[in-house]
Length: 567
Ligand SMILES: O=C1O[C@H]([C@@H](O)CO)C(O)=C1O
Image (cartoon, rainbow, N blue to C red; front, top):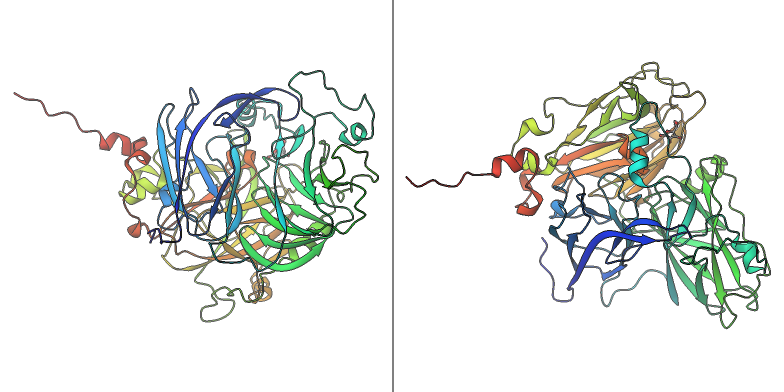
């Protein structure tokens, strides 16, 4: 399955993860870097290549893993980089070799998947170009990569302590939005560019308020690869006078869609094409603003720099404004307009178009356990076991993950999604759904009111190991009649999808990838508070798990053999 064909090649990387002092937004703190860099180095490969990352953990007291977000890991489920799910965390001073194939072109990312290390800065871009001799189904003259993130001044240990405290201490909104790891805290880049000397506090010597600059030539077409790896924020990117045409979402081609601005949720990636058809004597702003939560964070700005203008010349126009944070109608309209590109195979439809092999409904609610605030799915809040699921299932260690308790998979009849839960108490669990190998699975993600009255939040859900078709969205409680309205003709294939407040989102995938796969809200604090489930399929087809992935929890103890004593 993972033989390297003659045209493709192995790309080797040697990485060391460690704390580095960094000033992502002019405020210095310890950030998790790779080879001394934040964000981590960009990986570029071609479809069919094998990526080999030799990862050394130089964090002094923490384990680490890296998840290759968007890569399906066919045949290599142990390389998915999820602590307690696909592998044991790599201990300090130890090295783990990630070896996996990137089978198709796409704009992806990688990031930590242990504790809240992603929010601590452990992330970067992973870009897969089409295979040698192949062509993208659209033309462009050049490309830029925009990795979007949000940044907190409170370190992740304080954040995690707050989330598990009684009373609960919420992390709040991020201080700064970053583009390619750079942002400006408490600083009006716009005012600074227009010559106001008091616009930014540049007293910190390590401060670099320079914006991200995209140098372009007039009358050319550029591909912007845009990915969001935010901890919390939902984003909107606006290009003002330049129309964008969306052509790729999460590594899959989509029906070209022309827009002035676009929403991007954490875990999503897009490619858009822009044509530099504006007056070439000016430069232009690109704005990135917050959606879905009352923003307390300034928009991030980048500059479209028409050559040969100086990148620092005064701007002749204001930055485009992103839509109002709570204009959900606009967000829905955007999501509803993403379709697969013509010619993409439709989802399997089995006997009857609306009858899948299995339907799993997941009701996400905010709940309490012993007074601690948690997020729960069907009233179970995900707590990961000490033995990785992949290991315990492959070796039949049933006691290791609560195999006896099966989570439910239907919605409580008549559940009132517009009110806080009547039973706000939940329990902890391993939340494993075992799927029949090759089954077609529909998942209904149901949103509801949180603990406080009149609050329901956005949750972007990310599936590991698969792409899925987005069959539809709706408001209120999902009902069987809604399945008749599923889009089975041209639903987009994605790996991350948003669930809107008080609404539902339906997806379909084929359980054809032997392994154990996380499916979770991509908001870092929400996952940390239990908002996820585990899908397991085709375990009998999983090959030999590398020894380095196995030595923890129950497996670690069982593998220990006492030395033979000579008498
Ligand atoms: O998980 C969350 O907790 C807070 C709030 O619901 C309780 O303080 C919030 O905004 C979240 O997204």
